[in-house]
Amino acid sequence: QVQLVESGGGLVQAGGSLRLSCTASGSISSIGAMTWYRQAPGKQRELVAGITSSDRANYADSVKGRFTITRDNAKNTVYLEMNSLKLLDTAVYYCRAEVWIGAFRYFWGQGTQVTVSS
Image (cartoon, rainbow, N blue to C red; front, side, top):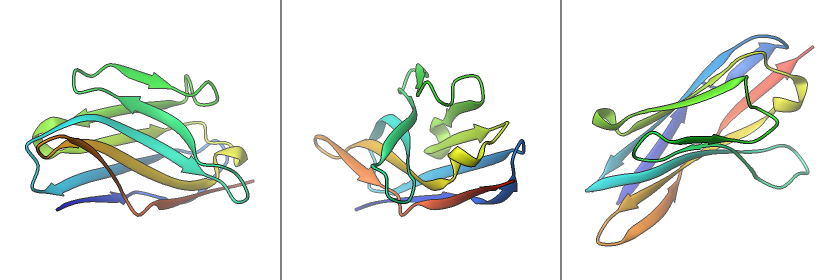
């Protein structure tokens, strides 16, 4: 089985920064794309940023220039550096990993709350 554990969420004032981490563990042969999603109250889950195994990154327009996604393949970990946070960034942030276990399957973390205050 594969587990993803996120950390780094919390309460921050607008304009501040946070760094989220997500580490995969378990029976992992390799990990493909790793992606951060978020879900605000009453809204659908939306893609925030993703990164391929070859470090190609993509971002939602709403976070471009403010968020940076990176990964450490040796640690099976993906990071999300969030700067210039806005009230609209308040949400539960989830990571998803594409894990090879005989075939590629998606696994999700449990989520970490990010709250931006004025």
